[in-house]
Length: 118
Image 1 (cartoon, one colour):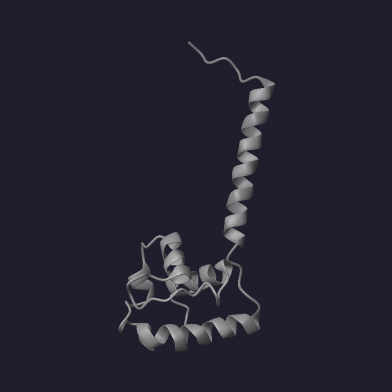
Image 2 (spheres, helix red, strand yellow):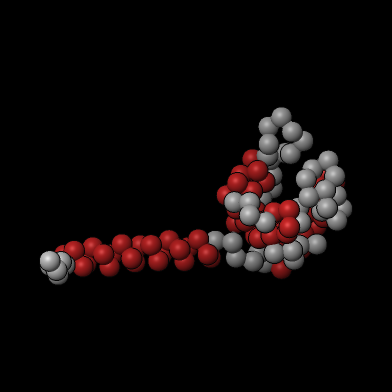
């Protein structure tokens, strides 16, 4: 038995759902835009100096775990984001939320995952 064609209302609802999903995907992909050059330089400096103090100056690990692309491969971005912004209670990992926006933190994480961070 063949399926009856969708009603116009059902087609409109499907199109609306597709549009909403597309907008959400676009918003998510734009969220971690590259910061302005001066801010990007500040974030790289923070990464080298502050993160490097625990994670090693070359980010290969130290008191903290390595922050290399290989070490971060396969780790969920949202989990990394929560750790970066809110720290890890009971460990030496402090919260960086007072110093970074969520977008800046996402940008830093993506830089590290791509191996392009200093």
